[in-house]
Image (cartoon, rainbow, N blue to C red; front, side):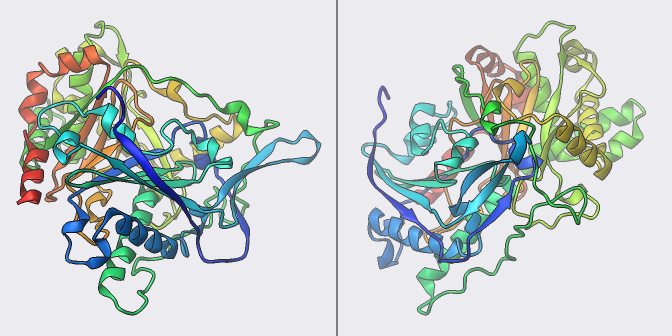
Length: 478
C-alpha cells in the first residue's frame, strides 16, 4: 500500500492508583539499552465483537476494557507508568539515570485500518507486509532514551475489517522481554477476570514483580554512575536500510529432526560430549547461521559469528527469580573460536555449527556475567545499529515467551508480529508457535538480495513447515 490506511481515532492516558513517589535506578544492563529502539511486539486477534460479552460489542468498548484492566495492572507494575530522569553528579562527577515513578501514565491509542483484513496482515508463503504491519505500532522511531519525555509503554489497538491488532511499544531500558511478557500476561489475566467476575477482580494470581535492581554485590546500591555530563552523549539515531521480513514455521517434528541430524553428525565425528549436549535451540540457531551466511555469498575467509540473546537470571549465583523486573540479558556469541564462512557452510556440517553455539551458551556462567558487568563499568557503552555485525547472525526474542497466553477476554491471538524496531540484515527472532507443542516461528530479516538467495536454499526450506499461519487463520474463522 502506497500510504498507511491507519487512522487514529483517540488517545488516552492510563495511570496507576496513587502511591508514594520513588526513583528506581537503572543498572548497566538497562542503561546499555538507551540508544536502542523500544520493544515493538503485537498480537493479531479475531474480532472481539464476536465474543458473547456485551462489554466487547465495539472496538471503543474493547479499548475501554483494556484501559481499565491496564490501570489495575499498573498497581503492581507502577514503574511502567513513570519516566526516566538523568541526575548530574556534583562537581562534574558524571550522571546516573533512574525511573521517576510519579504515575505519569501510559497511553492507549484507538486506530482504524479501513479496508484491511487479517489475510492482508498474514499473507501465506510471502513476505511480512512491513509497510502495513509497522503502521500498527506507536513510537515507531523512538529510542529508549526518549523515555525521558515519552511514555514508557504505549498500546495501539487497530480495528481491522475482520479482526483487531494490539501493538505494544515498550521501553527496553525498563526491562527485557521476559519481564515485558510477564507484565502483558498479568494485564491479560486481569482483563479476562473483569469479564467473568461480578465483584472487583483480584489484581492477578502471578507473583508480584521484583522491582529492586540487581547489583554485583548484593548489599551495594545498584545505581550506575556514567562518566559523562549527560547520557545523551551516548545516543545515536541511525536510519534502517531496506529490509525484507519472512515468518517461517518449524514444527516440533522438524526441530526434532534437526537436532537428531546434528547429534548424529557429531557422533560420526567422534564428539560424544557435543552430541550429548545438543538441544533443539542449538540445532535451529545453527541452521539459521549456516543458511543466512550461505545466502550472503560471503568470501571464503570472511569470519562470521552467531550471537544469541540469553537470559542471565538462572545463570547468576545466587540466581535471580523469574519475576525480576528489569533487564537481565546478554548477547553471547561464538567469537571465542573464529569461524570462516567456508568452514561454516562447506567444510563443516550442521552438527559442528550447533556444537559451536552450544559451547558459547555453556561458557556463559556467573563468573562470565560478572566479568562483563565489570568491563562495562570501566567503559560504558550502549547498543546501537552499529553493534550488528554485517557478516554475523543475531538471534533474539524467545519461544519461551508466553505470547499466546495473552488472552484479554476474547480468545488467543491468531499471530504475533513485530514493528520496525531493532532490525538489521541477519536478525532472526524466535516466537512460540501458536498451536503450542514445542513448535517455533522464526522472523527472519535480511537485505533484499540476501532474502532472494535464502528463498533458493534447499537446506533451509527442507526444515520449514509451510502455511502455518494460513491454517491458524482458517481455523479461527471457522
